[in-house]
Length: 274
Image (cartoon, rainbow, N blue to C red; front, side):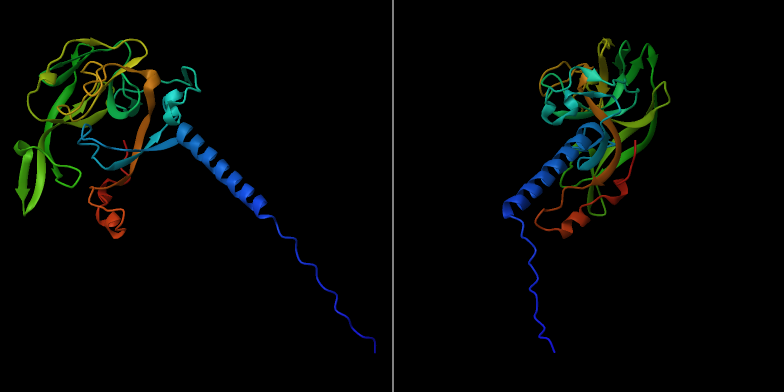
């Protein structure tokens, strides 16, 4: 009987560690490019930092913003990198759109407001009511807006109240309807200097923006002074249109306590569209 000898099996060649690192790095680079393209030209997240768009938007709401709605400019890109000259595929917003834009005059911070006037429109406020192209925009009083006090929202004494041991804020609320049928709620905190304005004529290539929380919004009613007003907003500064809320938090969560992420979430706001 012949002797049976075992033939050794050659080991599979090992890949150099340097090659694996190169592949991993290239994968991360491609992932970053894809994320940048999606964020620049398709959709982008946006978090609400102020109360200027109450009652529709709360501090702590997280939105999806469509970047393609009004075309693309350098402000579509991260850090407003000047790679896009002017604006391409440009389209004007509709009156009543809720839009994110780079706030004049510095064009650095992202603001979110409602589009009230388009190029050529005349706008004036009289006793808190918008006069658009010479016609008063319909305003109807509705039930007061009540919002719970929370770690990321509180209110001044005239608007504060208590109920069953919990703190709330209460404001007068109106339903405003633009000529194109767009309807939304606005808040009124009483008579302020911004309730009566001069007559504005929106120049070509610009829009007139206002917050729904009319007495707590630095918007196009005020001249372009950093931290005091934005004046007319160039169409080129438009970043995108708000689409829906994908998350909302009352500010009580701690990053170090994961279970608080759920208790802080405002589930009734998630999925709300515009």
